[in-house]
Length: 238
Image (cartoon, rainbow, N blue to C red; front, side, top):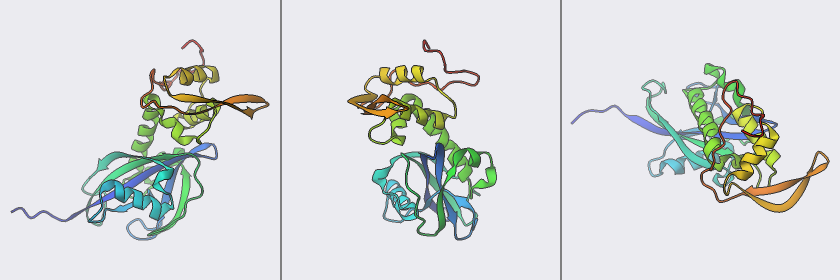
């Protein structure tokens, strides 16, 4: 019988929210080696009697004080490079969590601190995070950006009732590009079952704006395609 070396399974969480007009990720400052004092994604070892999603939900609450019901949670990818953890061979299953503007996180477990950090700044610096968490963050960011094209996930960053302008701001922040208001309004209200009008309004910039809630659509038809490089989303006939 082969003598395999020991290895561990962990979960890591890319928790994204729109906060203070920017896309932020939940980060935990490590209080223990390895990478003591460095920022990391929240996560930890999977316990013997729990499944992967259970471990992700537990870590979300223990390390950040967030209840699973507060976020949209989905599995992102698996990472298993031999040297990703200097302690031992470790395979991690990453999860993507999305939510509207969340309160200041509460550090717990083995975390020295917890905070919302600007995604744009972190992805520019490969050494900003411990382990391979910078790559996991990049993958989570691309997943979120892509899912905004073909799913109603953008509404996960909005409160229960929102205006089209609220939703457009989410798309602009996550995609990192301005969008034409008229064209965006036509696209999102034209996507089947994406938005459900509430027949109420909210005053915005001196005029009423219609309120919506998320409809029943699982996939957007037609999809909301991202503007490509050099493509200015300004034509109302596009």
